[in-house]
Length: 116
Length: 110
Image 1 (tube, rainbow over the protein chains, first blue to last red):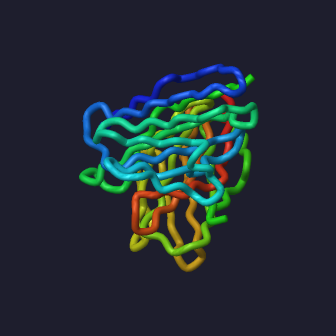
Image 2 (image 1 turned 90 degrees about the horizontal axis):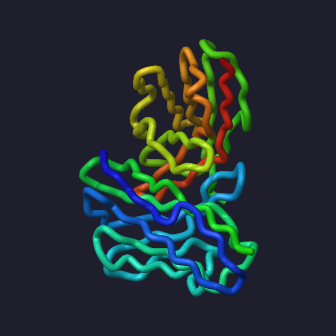
């Protein structure tokens, strides 16, 4: 099946720094990727939809200047958490859509961000 | 919030027993999907059921969909300790954007 690779798996950073998370589709081209955020023992909340070659579409309440998304190629989307604060600590998961295989999504393994 | 709700929030059973999880959603859908998540990991797609389908099977999984009640259920038969995970339903309208339910944490004791 299709594989989505997400890096890093975990990151610890100081408050005020920026963190970049990469999401790659390894064996298929993903025109659309999605970024989710998950707090402990809670569900996934969609943050934004990343479209190759165009601006990301953010969900209501998600700060686009805080969470920068770049989808520069059909196999790579990046999420940058700018000026991270402790409340940004969370599990971030990306997913990719491959329309030829139907509507199911392929998920990366997630990134645990801890901001000190 | 468009987020669906699942119940129970947590379920503990013995190996060999069946596990049933329910999902309710709020809007019209194109399809409903079930995903599994092991602790601290990404999600794995289990099964997809379209809005014009009422029941679907995949191995030990059985999914039902009642669009009139906006609800779905996931049945795992003959559960195993390895089935221990969180299970999420997710609904899709006309795009690939999925809205996830609140999840059910399943614990299967050997």
